Image (tube, rainbow, N blue to C red; front, side, top):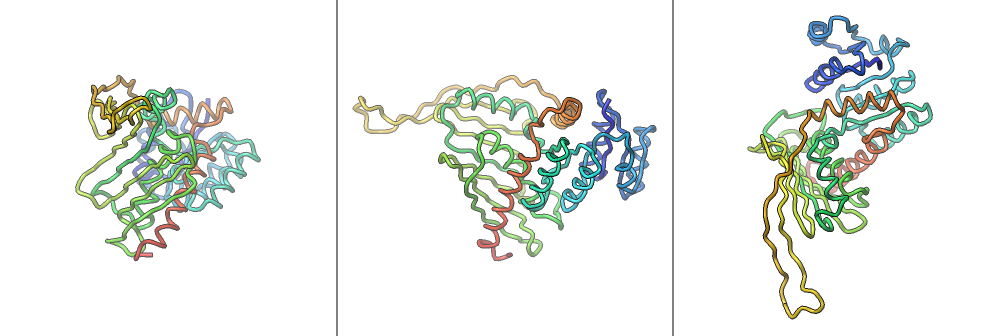
Length: 331
């Protein structure tokens, strides 16, 4: 039985409390938050869970095996570092840090101490993304040409991080995962319409060494809540719509072919086939992610979204931020 301590009980942290509190493979030992009202609600759901407003209380407890961190992004590095230094395995929400230097330090520290460091790139545990990765790796779509995603909403406007750092880690992690490589160049355009220096909308493009691209649109200033990813392949195209109540994944048997060397045709041939929605064994992605973390702590297995995966995403975010400083008047 793995003893877990959770830090941060905000909107997302409450979800971690909920999941770790019911998993049969772990025991929710501690919950830490500066808001006593949050801690009181935790006690209602988990009466045997210890509560504290001091992070040091749980880090000094030798019974605690691992710490799950869901504090504000600006505190991720600090909290993950002290937890690792205390000999605890760490799950930290995205982004794992706000600079690649900090992310590298966390990776090196976890590897030096032989501890699990896992980053909350939630979409990599979504059954639709898992299935899509299987299709790509099996060559079912043919050569993948490009990916594009939209993550927009008229939702919570943050003052401590931009839409880039808040939303884009999801789509960056998925693009790197699906294409199996890290981009060698990043370009970005964005604007800060509501708050100076904090972009509400960002368009970024990841350029990969083999010529593939991934274009990502993120915004919290949009009339529609959209969570959609499109993968365009030579033989087939796939759309993952996470807002769809059913049939979240659709395969379009469509494509375009150049004329072969022995063809007298002078034009590109377009093909329009059927639309297929494969069956997905749906399970809450967050539960799958938390189960994976506990399993990795118990077995020493390398997490799917380990520290190095988190580092790759932070590098892209950092490069995009540098591009925004050049292209955006708000910078």
